[in-house]
Length: 254
Image (cartoon, rainbow, N blue to C red; front, side, top):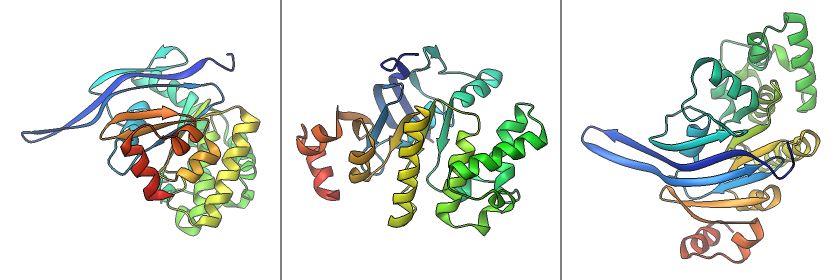
């Protein structure tokens, strides 16, 4: 796959929710692409539809309309075996890592689950889990700890290790640093930068912190009320916003 080839494409994605007799459209006609090795940021105020887009791409919620392509394959309505194959190529890192782990299981169990599901032996899984923990800045002993026994930053490092276990091509970060303090946030961003450089990963980076977006992203999409307000490089968006909404968004956070 060439560097400039699209690894992920979203075409006219829409999501509507119905409660009783009321219908609400959270995402309306969203289209974008993500290239191999690229970091695409998605920004916008709370309720703009950012997380809903991520959930549709990762099949945590079903699109109302539109199409999703991963490595040129239509994955919009993937199920069963096809869905498992998708998760080998694409993984998600959540905002609250402790909630994404089973509290009854150790971090090592959580990180190694996908490897065991692939038929890898218990011993080899343990070896890989320990290497992943080291890659993410944790010692192998963390494999035996439970989510409640570690800090938020440590748990997020373990969550990143879990996402990397299947050697995905795409990482989707949904506010992956927003629950962390500034020092830990900096450490996690340094880890993501390292992974991007060493593994040629592609990132969909959903974030409300424009300073992080400017530091990490190659391109940025601004979302407002479920649609794309504008798109460009971080410098274009922050220094030369095209719409009044983007100007207000930048003023509110910078």
